[in-house]
Picture 1 (cartoon, rainbow, N blue to C red):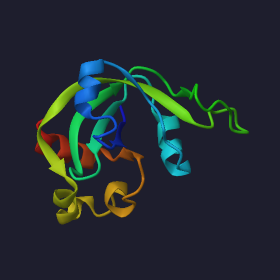
Picture 2: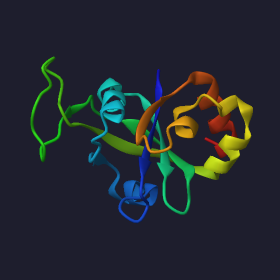
Picture 3: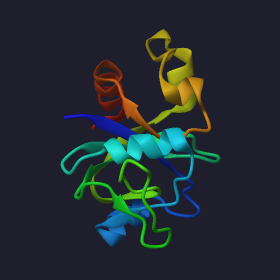
Picture 4: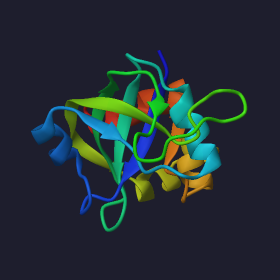
Length: 141
């Protein structure tokens, strides 16, 4: 089962907000590469939630409770029939016992090819299995 990483500005919507809400529609992604990642998420896939801004850290684990669907606020389909602006519903699974910072990941050669390190502005991305395992171990997930 694939794992993805989704970024959020904690001042706008934090992992704590997700825990309080118990479910959310993850929306607002516009970058084509990030939308491609969102469109590939499937119900049951797990998601590492990453806080941007001052924190810059993986702070929790969520689960997709829907397949991607058309953003109700930005309807439209691609020529292939996929949602142009895809969204996905998430529920929280567990907060990280120890947030894993971007600085830690950049300092570890195992993450040199990770999109989070190479394409820092990308807001959604798949997480390769070996990197997923290392992040979960460090975070206590």
